[in-house]
Image (cartoon, rainbow, N blue to C red; front, side):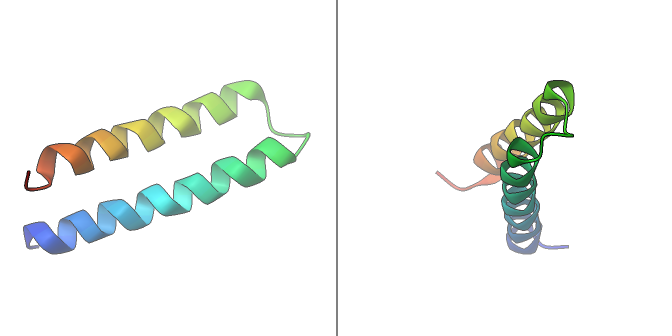
Length: 55
């Protein structure tokens, strides 16, 4: 997998997770812990994207 395609995949995952977080925040059945875990995964993806992106 090339770096470009890897970055695109990470960005897709980040966007998907962002949408999941938004939906979870609107759903009363979702616990704060679950939302926090999703936000942590989202941040980790963002950091990896930043690390791999050409500056």
